[in-house]
Length: 440
Image (cartoon, rainbow, N blue to C red; front, side, top):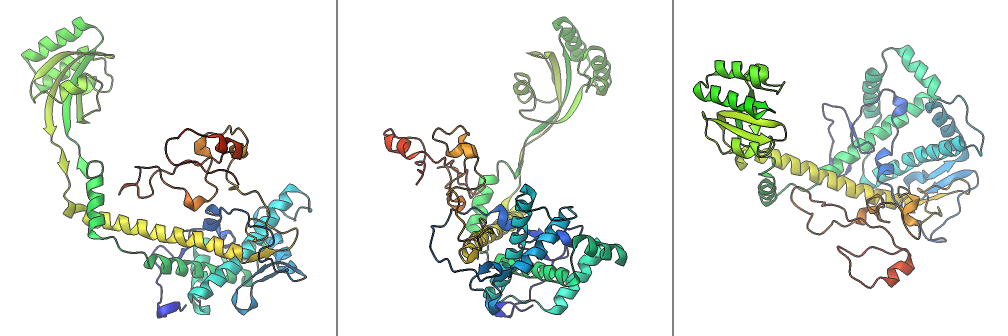
């Protein structure tokens, strides 16, 4: 494999990564190496206007992808029929359902999607100067085969059941190698966090992530009857030895969790007890029996046995951890940005024959809103909660004002329910936050 700049990617100990899956390969069968999952999860496209750049798909083909090297952008009917049989087999169906059947439509879209993944990925790899060698494919196939099949007979049975040939398997392994190398190349380009970014993150997270709150070891006796609690208090004020606490707790306490442990609760953090007991416990010095404290559970007698003060980790102790976390976030952001551009670019280059159009085709005609949005979001009087209604363009959802922080760099997405034109035009009073978009 020789990507641009002469770089030779390396594989981690966990196996070769895949930019289609966003992580190391972990499959039970090679037939489950379905490329394009990450794309479909992020695939939100507004329908493209009719008549813009719509070349005719050659006779006998079901789709044409433009700007693919070596004239490899055509998908023939024969390729589609074969992919349809394989898709049906992988879904556990012995034969392909008849056209018109709901299952047929689902399989048809999945089969075409798998073929488009192949063409798109090869086209993207060629544009980035990323290529594989037969040796790399053979090495990766050998590793995957050893991981997923115990015997040659088991692998042979897989080929038969999945309707795959060895050539089909090799093709998918090649795509797995390409996708992993592309992901690696993209994440390598992510910028390293600056010292200011590290320090800002530390300051923002110091109170929650890097501070160990003060804790106390406390002995407690609780009883719903005030007279019983008073009796326990008098006995413990005379003798607060561990042995007497064990005796008194067993006799008077109604807390099953601690009555047989001398009433001892270790490592209680402030706020972990009901009020007003919590305030009393954390404002009382060690070694003093106190009570009675009335709560909803009853009357308490307590003694602080040991106190551990709050501790804060210094920046120097967690700097490498923060830097690693910010690096991972930058890599994820770089990859997400790549995916968003990838889907839009290759969709605009993909044209499908009549009867085969999907959201991955530039000539697909559909409603101008995300497929993931419930229909109720687009009614004249929407009944869906605003949080359930995504923006028409996924990657442009702004954050709510004041929610972007070093800990939450993306902030909280602002809900963007589209409003009917007449409703938007009639709105005269200002609303909180950013204005909601209107339907076209």
